[in-house]
Picture 1 (spheres, one colour):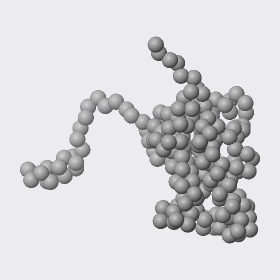
Picture 2 (spheres, rainbow, N blue to C red):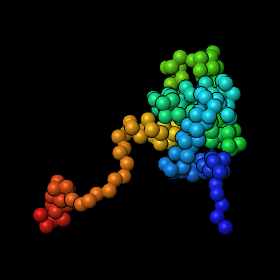
Picture 3 (spheres, rainbow, N blue to C red):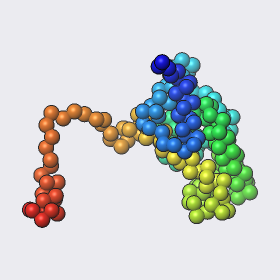
Picture 4 (tube, rainbow, N blue to C red):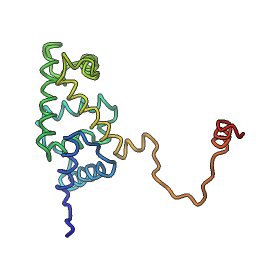
Length: 192
């Protein structure tokens, strides 16, 4: 018996894969981008589903800091939609965003959002490296999640695909090996 997957089941499956650290394929990511677009078409501008207003503002800024232009690719919306379908993922992000504020407050007397760009960068530069795991373990773990999912979200979006110049797969009527590749291979083989 074949089971038809609903949009919600697809999102739950993708969010579960993301929560256990499994790689999300481009095709799976496209389902998320399509769900966000469909939501916007049906109910206007995207409204956060998993995060508070402050968490949403913090996550948007974090995504944009990780990948400039991430907002064009819907990175926040991607993470929010997946987090709204998976409690473990939501917990990782809510906890991580709170951690950023708790660490930023004593450093500069402001939340992550209210800190100056160079102050935010200073904290992110620390948690971007696993060698700082002993002193900043939860932050390093969270930033690893945020970085991976922001990059996944952006580079599977129309804006990210356009940026890297991906043109898609296309059929070829005839395959020709480039002359320089052939010359290189022959030279390395000792036959040329």
